[in-house]
Amino acid sequence: MEDPYLWMENLSDERVLKFIEEENARFREFIGDIPDKLIDEVRKYYYLPNIWRAQLTERGIFVQINEKGRQLIKLFDTGEVIVDSKELEKELNDEVLLQGFTVDKEGKRLAYNFSIGGADEGITRIIDLKSREILEEIKPSLWNIVFLDDGYYFARFYRKEKTPDGMEPPAERVFLKKGDKERMIFGDGLPSGYFMNLQKSTDGKWAMLTVTFGWNKADIYFGPINKPEEWKKVYSSKAPAYPIDYKDKKLYIYTREGKGVGKIVVLEGEEIKEIIPEKEFPLEWAVIVEDKILTGYMVHASSLLRAFTLDGTLIEEIKFEMPGQVHPLDNDGKNVLLRYESFTVPYRVYRFSERLELVDEIKLKDNFKVEESFATSRDGTKIHYFTVKGEKDEKKAWVFGYGGFNIPLLPRFFPHAVPFIKRGGTFVMANLRGGSEYGEEWHRAGMRENKQNVFDDFIAVLEKLKREGYRVAAWGRSNGGLLVSATLVQRPNVMDAALIGYPVIDMLRFHKLYIGSVWILEYGNPDDPKDREFLLKYSPYHNIDPTKKYPPTLIYTGLYDDRVHPAHALKFAKKLKDVGAPVYLRVETKSGHMGASAETRVKELTDMLAFVIKVLYI
Image 1 (cartoon, rainbow, N blue to C red):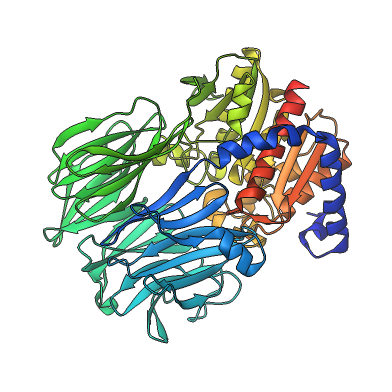
Image 2 (cartoon, rainbow, N blue to C red; image 1 turned 135 degrees about the horizontal axis):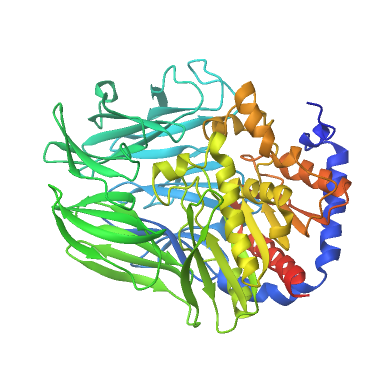
């Protein structure tokens, strides 16, 4: 099929750069000075302290925290700053995004990743925590670092070049590094689409390696942490699965086999025993703390904790007063750190051992109401959604959706939504098929040939809000950008504005752009005639109708997005513009798919809010 905008896939083409420059200027003209009136308010909420990661060590708790525009890695108990993004920016003379860190058990060595301009691919530094000396700097960044006494394991992701064993990219391999020598210890012969995650048992003695193929099956390998040659496959699952921990000569495993809502089995020798069976709602995660299994269940997309004995007997249930999401940050076998987040709570950190104890929190003082409701999709499926309102309701709704890759949308803090709610807006988050909100069957009902279900679910929520008298702005990012762009071309009348961020849109070429081929398992293969048929039927890029009246649409992306190629956004914007649609394009030159530096992100969020206010209010 001929593509007249194929030239836009070349980001160094002068015509592309000129188009970006012109469209950025046109967008600035459209929103005028509205961002200037909003940015301080967005910055205020974005700059609230927020702990994203934490790790327990013998020296204390290390945390990654965003505060006052800085991304920091520091010791929580003493406040000692180890890494400061602002210092990195001074050193490198560019914008920096901290991506993550890991510390050894003793608190002697720290590895952290950062990237320039929000790209996925970045730099890894390993430092001596006593002297602060940089022991190693590796480009591109390494992932899944697991420290040993005399070295470390790591994963390397091959984006462009072949793996050492000759397989085509994108692909991943696990290595062991000791001194100046590294050797590949896992992944030989595995083709593209396989991903690996290595973890230690909490006693530090055992390696637990999960090999996943896409989002649909998993193999678990197990063996002594220092002897990779002895790691053996001990469990295979045709659904997502991972090892929880090894205790009392038993390997505890989380698996979504069965109905796909999650259960826990124990592997003892050759025997597999189910100890916590599937329940009505999905089991999201599990950790072992002393002689308890602490679990997180997802009930209508918000968290409920349950503690069990090691043989699966329920001890207690822990509920939260406001719908929120809770995930473990780290677990040393004696204590587990948990992170809670909700629409009005940027974060809370809890410690769980004998009971749940609050360690730290930031919350808003505003009187916001979080409510839940359901819409009915075209095939009769009930679609859950959250609404967040302030003290007044101006009948303006900003609706966020995703629907894919087994990723649930759970309550979270949106700093740019707070000023919208304060102005009488209603923020809405929809739990569509394709995610994992109701288990693996829910996911599969929204992937491949079933993708249309996701768009129908979103349409049902938007239609219900329209019937209730709301003016509606629909918003999605990444796979959510596909959601909103598909809904836009199918049913433009169900929204008054569309916001499409870092999107996947050309469903016949996504597998040829950057690492898009790894999404074939989720979307289908455009080179397979059967898959191509259903992909073409909904591909937003191929279904623009010049006879339809489209609402004002903002498409935004980052020039350094090296996961979802910016051409998806550029081509769609150009094609919409050429049929006379009121489309605006915003291309950030300092951000990628992983995000951006704090101030760049504040500007992007402010522009999104300004667009929503301009279209819905003015």
